[in-house]
Image (tube, helix red, strand yellow):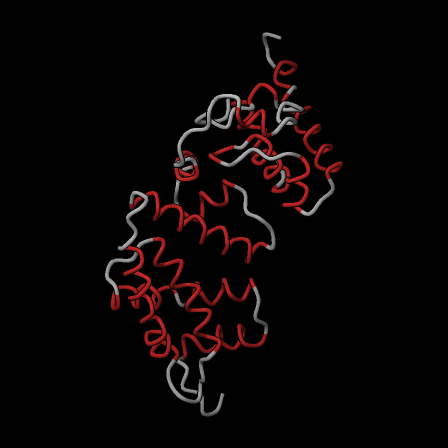
Length: 245
């Protein structure tokens, strides 16, 4: 536009974001600005890490809100705005209560979950979080389960409906799903994956009752019970499909 100083490479993505701000355009412009974001991190802090990059993405979206194309280039504006990463980095390096890698992992996971929820319009599944963070599902479990181990039977006592379905794999401490259950999980919809994750306490999550799952996912407890029963029916097909059955 006339009088705008925005760089040519950024002009169309910025105009599209400005005209229709929202999850889709946020993701699009952040992808365009990826080299700028990484460059700002290296300039102000040093080598990027997942937590810094996640925080820088949020700060970039905040910075776009007060960018004036008539006053300067977008890249310069963002470099100045992202100087706040110096403070973020100092906060990171001062954390002593939890081992550094666990703390970094937790914050990276929290940032990814928040970003994905914003983009997808729903809670992400664990496989989506693994793809976004680069963490294995096993590492997600370690990050979530860092607190001292819960005594045997405590989860079942706290969540009396935990054995309602999925009785053969109810332990949240299993390192991985049995092969058949993993196959079923991979075939489920995003919603049913969340039901399975929360019901079983998969990957370090806390096991939840139907009422809590319903509240978290915005559905009725009866609907959650129906979905769990359907998933259990699929799990039970293992014996039916076995060549040795």
